Image 1: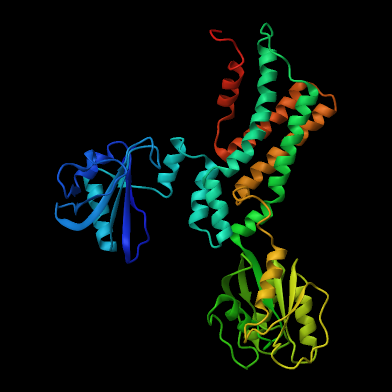
Image 2: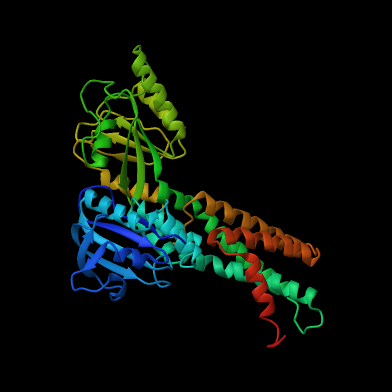
Length: 451
């Protein structure tokens, strides 16, 4: 493969910036742009140890004093020879180092190409490769925990027993049919049924937790609803920790949806502060109210804010009706620091007394959100976090259930085999394994030596 190079840190001023190189012959290229301070060549430096030296530009001029480290393959991230230059974090220095590598024979790496090479070279499976980007994009501690466990192979270890069990069924069938003269014991009906039942249980558990995995990675779309001037924007500011939305005593200040993210109870909320819901003759505000209603319809959670210091109004009822369109609702009686005058709350979900201005009651809100969207009930690394994984497990489960029904219905073994192979193919999509190679290897493991 070509030698590839890229800047692996953000394009911004920082203390340290890293340039990464990978591919056969990369050490010889690195020798052209890096001179160890102690003399000699970088290509002969001790593996996995930092070497201090001078970084040269394409004209051979020193552009930085930096540290370099080489990782000989196959025990590197990509499975091939790799090197990294840890420079001072000037974007100019990093770009010049990259240009020097290009001039020496490397090319620009594509998106995700280092991780793609790691997969192609057998350093990780597809679920682990996907975990790399999940870890980079983690916005909660729980999301990071799940990603790092998947990077360590947690999802693969969960799936492997299912795959191996199906492989046992298929390989035994092929061995008996294709090699009738060999003394190979057929797989019994009860044994096959137990294998399929275990597979069904495992895949069902993975699929049932897929919703939590999506919440973990993408967050929960949350609409903040209420009539004008009840404290919606104050609540948004309290949750995000700074003045994101304008707060005034003038009703109708928020005329469009304002979006921000906050972590509450370990759950990432994608908050949408909406215009106050009321009848208005203002054309612009009217558009904002309509957007508020649509936001509630699309949201997974609605935070209905009521002003506890004022009596019930028809606008409160209209806001409650809009909030009821969301699958989950938390009712927040705001302004608990003022005398209570509101004597009504809709029966839509948990009811909490808060003061967005004082920041009181938000701990209770965290607890309720955590209870509504639990993400910690499944072992870290076993949550499906993308649609591709979820679809593959869903197809595998359907195929396993079909194989089980065929077995219980007394159909011929080839009907069971057909569904078992479909399930294996679907599971193979998660890890990137090749089912046919695995199947062939398992069949011939059953023969005597020399056969």
